[in-house]
Image 1 (cartoon, rainbow, N blue to C red):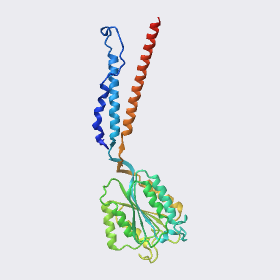
Image 2: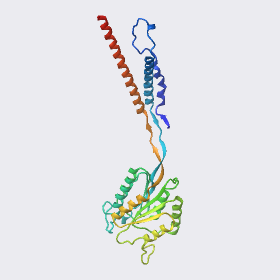
Image 3: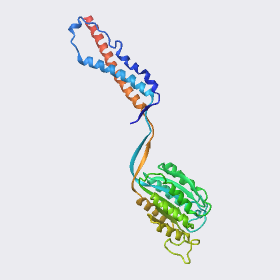
Image 4: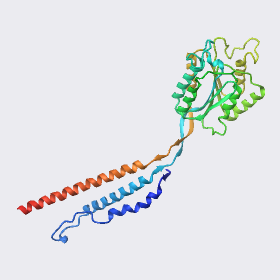
Length: 338
């Protein structure tokens, strides 16, 4: 444990703890001859113990005033989960529902609203995961770095209530998401969770760069494809397919070809999306090692509690001392009357 003091100069008064050992602390009693009195080791021990308790009380109060605390600590822990970067599509098409009807960004029926609610539930259920977030349309926006602060990530998800704009341009968002793992130690599963209802053409040079980064950082990719009734399944090759008219199909083919753990989930309705999120939760529940910071902890209250306990013991002893003196005084009065 790494201990420190906020006001160490207070300990300059620690010699005050010797005060109980000076002066007389017991009531003097007259007796015919001290030589007749036997040595009482128990009384001597109790008397010395009370002095030590008094000294300890003074010292504890001084230590408490000095402000003792444990410094911030970094602890390595082992949990269950993954490092997950949520790559969330914020293009205009995400304002539509699964039937292709357009809604405003705040409408509960829109794809972004349903995805937002289910992602929030997913995050709340995850215990040890690190979450980061990027939103993208024409260009990506860094929203939140990888963190275990659930309040922050839930607030970031909730901030997607504004209306989406622009087109779906996935490549820059993927590159930014992969860079989240740069210079981070590999301590568990790494996942990019792509939530999108479309795709765009990725040129060969960008494909090569993304492939290299996926392998370099050892990242898995989950694509939650929110397709409506007008869209084809990812594995269904369209007639006269090309990267302009069917970008989702070719993007799916690219992800399958780069040799990384990849899984595509297709959701055509809110219920299917719920099942997809649940399945991802089951898949990514592996051991993960992470670093937890333990905040500075004050120890002054413990010193005060011990000091109060010592004071109560001294008061208890003083009570019996006064009671004994009172009984002795009354005994002398009765003896005088006889």
